[in-house]
Length: 264
Image 1 (tube, rainbow, N blue to C red):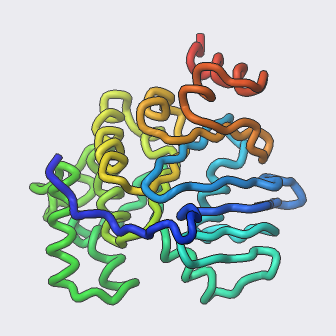
Image 2: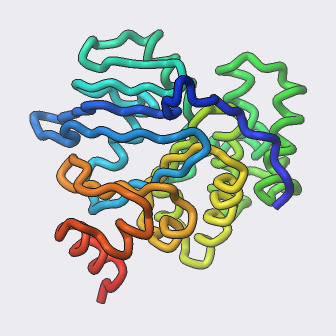
């Protein structure tokens, strides 16, 4: 991978972390999906969320990105804070959304646009950046994720791993303070997983602030600064990866890890 541009940095103000979540709650149809979720993410660190399907991990990401509005609790990213209990309007939610960028489980690329146009659409349409400037940035980002020669191709001409790397470049093009990854390798063939994880490891080394939902325990062990294990909409256990993944305190965490690491 070639060198990327330096990431945008939000220095921790008065010792505060870049991300702070307090009392986050969310229900769908009367079913509680999140209950009193709290955690912080220091600038330049990687937080990994693990847990069984339906534990609320993706909903946490979507509330951070304001794709879902919580029923209660506050989310602060940098200097933008939202109190979901106050029913924030579109303008406030838009400011929060502008602080982060999401890489989805499915690539969600525009099939009718070239790779280059997929990466430039956000900066040009949403942020109003001049197209020439956006294209120069997009080409540099594509080079950095190993796709410098694919700018004029369409998504259908790429492998799943290549499409996901385009998705990462597209997220980076928005120059977010925070990168959110929702199981970015779960839809890929096993042989393509490594190329996506390699890009994510590069981002971690560069000091990008990331929150990642994943079942890739080896990645979590080697890259994350903290791991949060979620079950039933709550954070059951949290700590450094060496502690949570190899010597968890909670029985529920141990059971989950045994099933994930020894599926047969």
